Image (cartoon, rainbow, N blue to C red; front, side, top):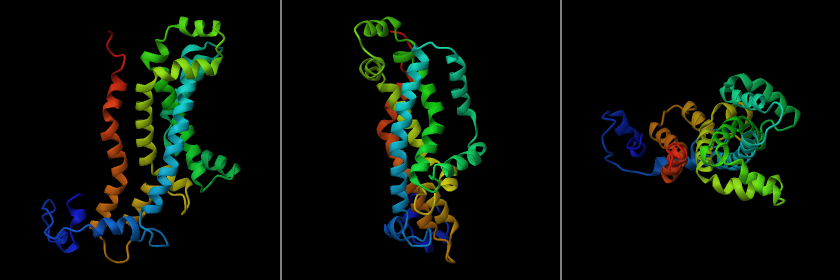
Length: 259
């Protein structure tokens, strides 16, 4: 994909797909980004990239925060039905996307969020809470294994719930926060089904634009532009993981060995 994204079509059609380009050019990347025909207008993938950013950033922030909050409650606060509630939240992790399409569409329609970036943000927050709650609830070093005496001491000193959460819990949650942020960022950025089902021409994310780029044609399949578009869609999550991957592995392994 990388070497062919810099080749003219004549070289690609000649075969030897793994050969380095004889005529190296960035024009196909520029076209995929700014002028490729994706929708009605030849906008390239740039506006859809911005849609993905506007969708991913708030969805990751809110789903991570809500997951940390619910994980703390379910790990350290006992109340009637807490085990059942955690089981139901955990069950949400195993519900396929396709099953929730119709009820989600009805809810978005009721709140007049269908075809908007805000609607996509809400969908990803709700669908991600099951995973984020699971991560925080079972994180060994800050939630499940946190001594109850620490929380009790804070309560004796007059700390309310949110003060305990922000002053004691969150500062000890950096590894699992990184795990959750990487997980959510990757899943939300790469999502196609929710984007194509609930987004419109002005709110669809990068993955939908890539599908439209490859599927639409004016007569000639520009494989070099398609390869460049696919790499543009993959680069953000790839770069993000390369920069923070060690924190992901460190968070997953945190607490697995005593001492």
